[in-house]
Image 1: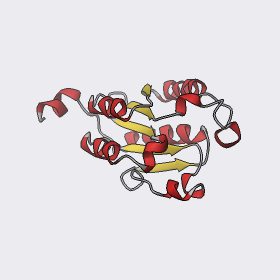
Image 2 (image 1 turned 90 degrees about the horizontal axis):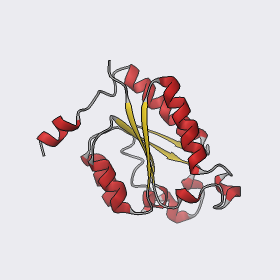
Image 3 (image 1 turned 90 degrees about the vertical axis):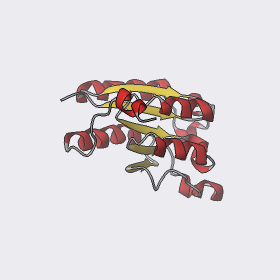
Image 4 (image 1 turned 45 degrees about the vertical axis):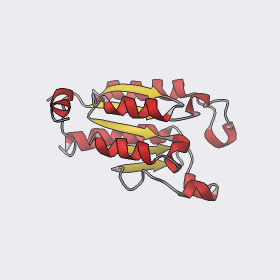
Length: 160
């Protein structure tokens, strides 16, 4: 059986973790979160790639490569505004788990709008960096049970 390939997609301002409102988001940097996740992925036998951008189009372009079987997505503020990111996640036809360090629904009213929650296969919110690890384990479980199947970049691009 091939290895599960997981893309970790992080949206705007997550590059500022560790210094951005640490009382709210914690003191771990994105690099520290990604390193911990990479260590877990190695133990689980998962091929992991992380990508962060403050630009919506760059996130969408990364998804369009379709070189992954499943994704972990923390869209940051784009969660509440981006129909385009939602459309891209649906278009690439890969399961994804939505992660947020905080619980957006318990914060400002505008954060209660979420364009991703109804299309994510699972969600982990308000658990800081633990949410990423839980998401990785959820995808590993789904891979082992056959809920996620290996995908080929070539077969996806052949139809387009």
